[in-house]
Image 1 (cartoon, chains in turn purple, blue):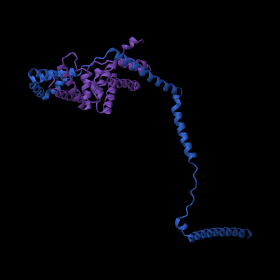
Image 2: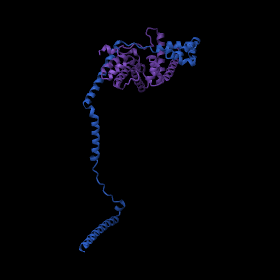
Image 3: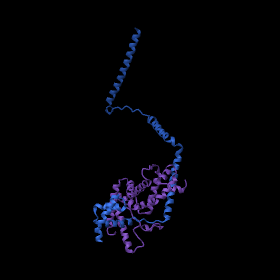
Image 4: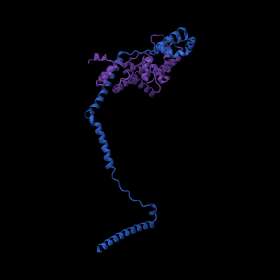
Length: 193
Length: 174
């Protein structure tokens, strides 16, 4: 099977090929999910290098455990769980996340953080900076499960059902987490919206 | 500002969770219609929803990363995976010729070694010398007394032996 037709295969078909010994097929899954994995790790770490390491660790872990994947959930739910668990371990280890100004990356690889618009005037820039600071603080102070549910929904666009699978909880619980997280954020940004 | 703050703080409590789910499109069709109907009549909840629409996408604005970043990320990942595959295959190759019988053979060898050790390694039991009670040792007279008792016992045994021998002789003579 050539590379082009492999690219068209569904996740579960690629996983089956990996399980049958074609480990190199896993590289297609890396290409498919590297951005999402990196972004969820970045949401937790706020550091590009650590996000890269964490997300790459998640891929390596997924690869080494690929034979344990039984297809009861989709591959990406299973993989997201690995990423999220690694991120939660990371936050537990770190205790407190030190925020990094991404625009100062040495190679200029990273653009300014989302809430800061460099094209806007100084007042708007200052306001955006303050908004970002408040969002960061609120997310940091939030219980881990609320934060995870919020990041997966708001930043990653996962459905409630998928978040429930990733977090191994019920959809109702995820809805509650999401509501509480949004309520907390709204409260902290009440002057800025 | 005050008016907006007031609007946000006074969003209908029973609709707040539904409004969040409505925003994300995670509600049922019936709830979706119910929220829409309610928002047509309630300016506070309408304002709340508007705020969510302004606030939440702002928080999630993704950072644009250049293609070079992703190229580097991917090539690093491929290298790490190749290394992991190599390590995995070295391990497998090492064990693959013996994989079928290695584990039971290893287990049997361990059990046999353990059994041999238990039988021979710890088999040299030195007899524990009979201990003379301390109260006997402290008194020299007692020791002599017990020694003489031993002697008497020995003499008694000899006499018995002699007696039985002479009895046997008497029987043969008769």
